[in-house]
Image (cartoon, rainbow, N blue to C red; front, side, top):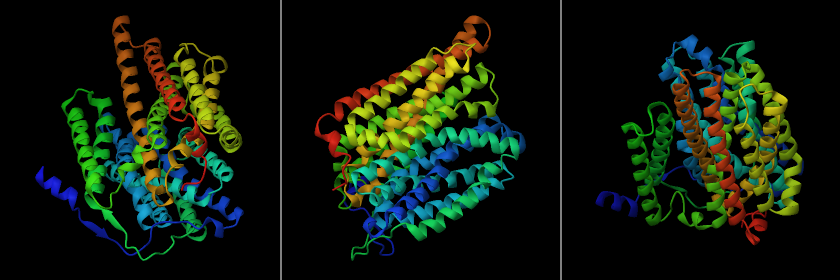
Length: 502
């Protein structure tokens, strides 16, 4: 412990070429150029978001082609989540230190090259390793993208509109991935869910170099908190590893408990380092802001409900109602359409009219009610009566709530730390989603197993009983997020978060 204490007081500094902290020059760009630049950033983010879910539909084909077992197949998904969740915070801070455009281009390049490796993979090891590298690129892209957006748009009205576009890409990308993955796999092969990223990635890199503002040069030489970077990245990766593995081997298994315990210890060491180092990776004063702290807790609860909802509703449609993969993708279209209408138009106007608190709470409550509707969906349910109303409410809630939540998480942050704040909120979404999916999927499976044992068989009714329980608990997460938002963003904080960072 003495060695750790010494390290915390005098960590080494990693000197990189003297690229300055990212400070965009949005006023030098024309309004049209800024919006085109936003589209480029969102396209890069969409690639990263899609690859969390696009693989799910293709897993049976990948398993048959490369000979995965049930135990090893999960690492096609988990390998990406492990590195993506672990590198988000570090990626955001690197953007602040060495230039957000530079890091964004590097992230897209890593992601694109890893996509090529995934697409031509002919062995299990090659595919899993390439997916892990893809996760590193995806983490960098997601971590700096929101900071780029905040620096491109400084006027509150324009920023609210831009956040709506970004929010739609993030919230709707998962369900779009289900539809796209099924289509590409059915028409061509699973290889194309990765190869389709190549022309997109090349285009994003070229347009980013042409359109995104560069960092303002200063005489400061950026220095990276090495020990902080190592400890927090290792902690987050261990936490994701334990969470995603807990679903398979059990939450009381020694490996799960050891992973969670080690992650907690490393996080404690990270906090100790950040409290003593002169140039911390994450200044702890950020977490003393009520808006920042509350918005990140809400992000955890929100994503826990939403990630599990998309996963479990797809299982309900396939295993209980008997839908095909393509039909599942089409069933998600109403959610995407409503989300698009709200995110791309209505949400910005609502935020500018009512502030952050009201729209956030209303959107979270709409999602909670949508989940409750799914919690009562019967075995012989019909799409119009038992699926569509919940889908519409989920789209409405996400389209309304996501924009103010992002504004709250970023609004009180100085421009020089916008990448870090972006990494923090993206980490909250990733960790909440992984935790919610793991916990609710485990509870659904356990309840279905108990019901099946009591009934003597695991039929559609017992499967549905597990899904209904998970949907009800997910609704509880959404209600808790709404209650926290109503408390934390009362008064002037709700209005101030929509303004430009100071």
